[in-house]
Image (cartoon, rainbow, N blue to C red; front, side):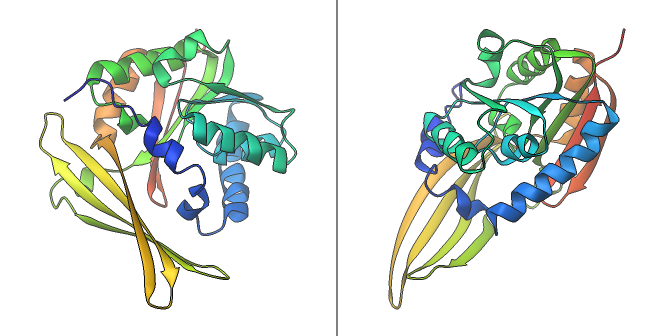
Length: 256
């Protein structure tokens, strides 16, 4: 297994189809913003580093609520889409976009930030223990004392025993076509255990449909594994709770 898991081609190819991940994009923005603000308020957050911004789901939602956001992503395609979305929602003055992966953030952004977040199951793209530790150390260094760490990822723990192969997505009924999404998962024992999500998009109408398939690799990372690294790096007050399909984990950088 290669140490570096390059996901840019996958997310570049999805830059035009990102809305297919959501039932309703506008509703998702509103929900994400209000949900994240509950955590931000407790820590007097004003500046945020979104370390895996994707199409801007969290960055734009927070900017609309008045936060100053730096949004990073390694995919040029999805980052361009995020910039377009920020312009559409009138928040370009509150979001600074940066092309960077996790391990080069300290070369592209200047802290300290009041909060660092990574949602959308991005941390499990890191395959090796040392990559996860390095990333969390960078998050720690870019955060002010007392700052908030917030990570959202899929809870792989209950999936490791049964190892499902099929994962349903969404059905979008458009004016001139129907779009159906689903994933087929290919598991590998590793170590570490990994799973390739083969994301299928089926488009068409009547009796004529076309299919595309895009693979992307994840480590089947568990909350327990991540909690160990978060604590070893120096964060404290670790908490985890389920939020729809994500396991949402928070921790703080000590004041001292």
